[in-house]
Amino acid sequence: MVGPPGSGKSMLAARLPSILPPLSAAELLEVSMIHSIAGQLSGGRLSDRRPYRTPHHSATMAALVGGGLRARPGEASLAHHGVLFLDEFPEFAPQVLDALRQPLETAECIIARANHRVSYPAAIQLVAAMNPCRCGMAGEPGHSCARGPRCQSDYQARISGPLMDRIDIRIDVPAVSAADLIRPRAAETSSAVAERVARARSMQRERFAAAGLPQVGTNARCSTALIEKLAEPDAGGLQLVRDAAEKMKFSARGYHRVLKVARTLADLDESAIVGRIHLAEAISYRIAGERLTAAA
Ligand SMILES: Nc1ncnc2c1ncn2[C@@H]1O[C@H](COP(=O)(O)OP(=O)(O)OP(=O)(O)O)[C@@H](O)[C@H]1O
Ligand SMILES: [Mg+2]
Ligand SMILES: [Zn+2]
Image (cartoon, rainbow, N blue to C red; front, side, top):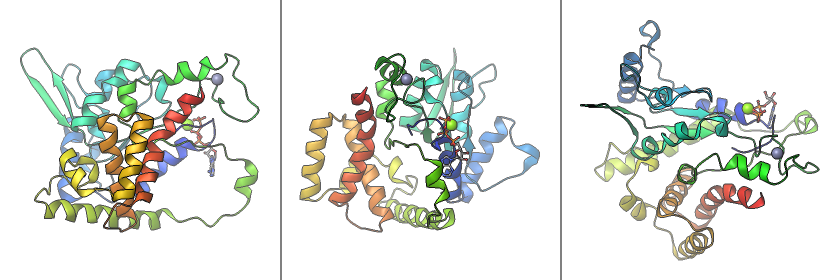
């Protein structure tokens, strides 16, 4: 999420757990084991709420992906089956952020030692928030950065290309005026959204169970070969993806991730086929970041 100060990025992220389905019994067991190893199982109480971890931007690599004297699990593993929220994303040390690249791909953190290695699971949903530039206001109407256009490009360059490539949904969070808040608006409640999410997730579970892959569970964890089959676009959709991939220079990873997001959007619509409309939305989420960088 990219937006100016006070636009509600941290607030949105904090609400995310309220729309996620509870942990299954098997997931709860895995989560509890990791928290127990880390000495974080307070009083032995178990909760089926998905983990929501918010490490500070001063976190070290060991704190984030695990390590230290006793090879303890890091925040990424403590967030297993849940959300890892990194607020003020560019303020994290670049090499600490890049240590997340491998876990984001393989869903596990590996701690290598001289003569052995430890691996902890880390199937996480990474959520990150940032201002568009260091002064926070780049791109806002009527604002011009004291340091000029470099302000935005230098700040955003702190997130490496390969890490950015792993972020599937990029959204601009525009400023909300006080006047907007005063006007009452009919909004869907979190519990109504949570029901939709739960339905989409159960469709995904059934789909992967039917394919003989019950361990996959969500579109995000699906293999590239399988997602090409499951999210096969119709002719219109295929043309759209081709054009976008060419213009926006998607990586191979980017292409498969667009398919996964589109499959999920179709699931939320309870639609068996992935239509052009789902692909268009998925593509728009991937290119939002590029738009920002291009504007800089
Ligand atoms: N859409 C909104 N609806 C209701 N309240 C909002 C909204 N956006 C912001 N606010 C109010 O503004 C406060 C600040 O929002 P928040 O801390 O999430 O901003 P932020 O985008 O994280 O800013 P920063 O970049 O400074 O960290 C919230 O606690 C809330 O009171
Ligand atoms: Mg904030
Ligand atoms: Zn600036």
